[in-house]
Image (cartoon, rainbow, N blue to C red; front, top):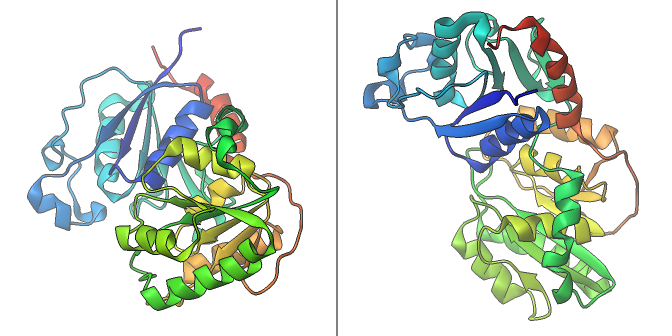
Length: 316
């Protein structure tokens, strides 16, 4: 059977790309990725007030596709436009709350902690993502030659957003806890920055930790995958539910480096409560524990359900 073709629509951010590509791979789609750009005026208008017309976005989408997977505010109107144009010849799936009528999509995938309700809503525990066991296994040797200790602590750093400002004082406290709990107890550190990690924090890590620790300076997917496989424990900063969800694929104990929120973070709190109830995470405090949990693979579960629905669509 010929592979179905996927069209992925995002704003180009790592968390969004991870989710749409993860689902596309799990559905075995042959896909292309379109970074959506809105025309100037429509950048400021919420999707529910935006006309479903092609003049809203700059992208000229002319390639053949069967399944549209969108994520992010800018991709909402293009996805609805394509569904109205092609009807049952395509399936359109939106990831996260689109802030418009859910009836515009065949499926909406949203984390449980969002509280989204609808007959076409597929709820997940945390965020879906692109990681697979196969990729982790294939990349373990990328950093392995640099490992000199028996135990590894992987530190995955996010960056400032509207909820957390990553001020130097709190980062210093997190680094002190990391050194006291792990490095001083014989662990080797792998520090992994994300696309949102400011250079000042990477430089701070380089200066704070000794030369025996591995500080990755740039965005390096292979290093990220290798670090998850090599880790005995994982620390993830609290600003990204996506990165915490990805780390849960490893099955390793995850410590969340909490920071004071600069605005109400109710969705984050619900997420943390859920993952604590599943024994996936604990807050980074002053002691190290060992615990086990079932590896989280929501992408596989959700894709299995969607794949069964393909029979109801005219993909010819």
